[in-house]
Image (cartoon, rainbow, N blue to C red; front, side):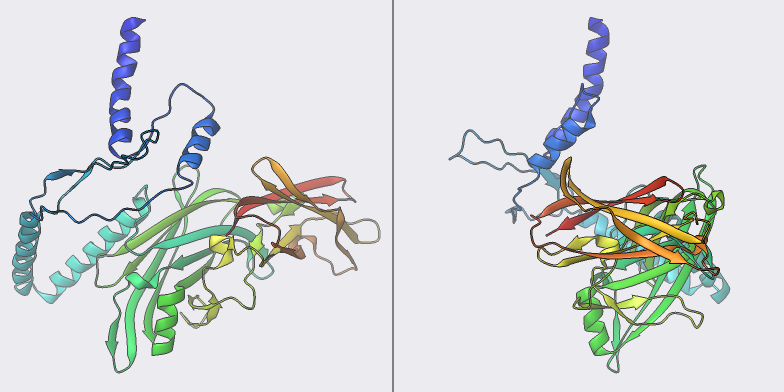
Amino acid sequence: MRIERTGIEAQRDGIFALARDTGGTAFFNNNDMNIGLKKVLENTETWYLLAFEPNNSYRDGKFRKLEVRLPQRKDLKIRTRGGYFAPDGKAEIKAIREKEKQSEKDKEKSPEKLAKDQQNAIQAQIRDGISTLFPRRGIPIQMTASFLNLPDLGVMADISAHLDAKQLKFDESGGRYRASLEIIGFAFDEAGNVAGSFSDTAGLNLKQETYEKALQNGIAYSKYVKLKPGFYQIRIMAREDGTTQIGSASAWIEIPDLGKQQLTLSSIFFTPQESAKQAVTMQNPPGGISEKSESALPPKVYRRFKRGSNLDFLLFAYNPKLDAKGTADLAIQIQIYQGSKLVLASPLTAFSRQTGPNINPTQGLPYFARLPLNSYEPGTYDLRLVVIDRVAKSSSKRSINFFVE
């Protein structure tokens, strides 16, 4: 047993060292992850960002040790990185020379060979962006994936993304700002197989006003992807033509089977308010990529709201059972939690009552509501919706988290 314990401790040494040298903490010997996560959240609730300019400016690529002290407060413990690696000037010069050599070689290549090499480089860039386990932040991008049933298209994954345009390399000419941006995405099923894909290319040619709007509020992107019922991971990447910059993000989504004729709820959609700032939007209508106005930091993507503002949300209920008169009778309760604490539980209210021979339960009955956030302290909350089908005597639930600033 002593030998086994020694072996376990030896395996942990690397993790302890990694945590200590990067200003972190390692947690062991507890199967309850909430304990460790609670400590992490408490410890990182307040932090300080310190700037440092080294006296030693040699670009030799060597490790520089750093130590932060607080002499007046011996009772406090400081956790920070133990140092950094200086830039390697020799490596940078070598890379520049290699690039120059490659440029000279490219001059000797035929146009066909250059086009093929360029295409291979783009494909490698795409593989890198899609296959990486961690988000690439060359072009900061956030995304979310939702589910809904559209009358003309059927059951779809609604993919929304927001890009930070400050990292794009716009070329200015004649009062116009130009950049070429490509969005590529894949849907992977539980077995890791590609179940769907999409790509859009936008040749941005922006006026001064639109360019400034894009820099300030970013670029929004939306796409519908048809998927069969099941669990999927959606991976999306953005790349700028002519540069090595890429950004990537991923999200999980469940597409339910509406053919089972059971009460099913769509995803919860947070809708922008009329007073929100405007951003440049990429979308894919039949005529190709276009620009239009949409809210900056889309609530559907970021789910962040100012205290004192309103939280507007939309939900659809599919497959409600109809009584003998062809009437659907649904009721809904709104619940809001902060952690395990119940903050709000609304009375059970009528969701929708619709009667008539033309009602189609699979098209969905909509529900819209507005919640004032005047009394909500800054923090993370869970919005939970419980819908009861009084005819079928069944219920369904949906939940989503949001943040009050």
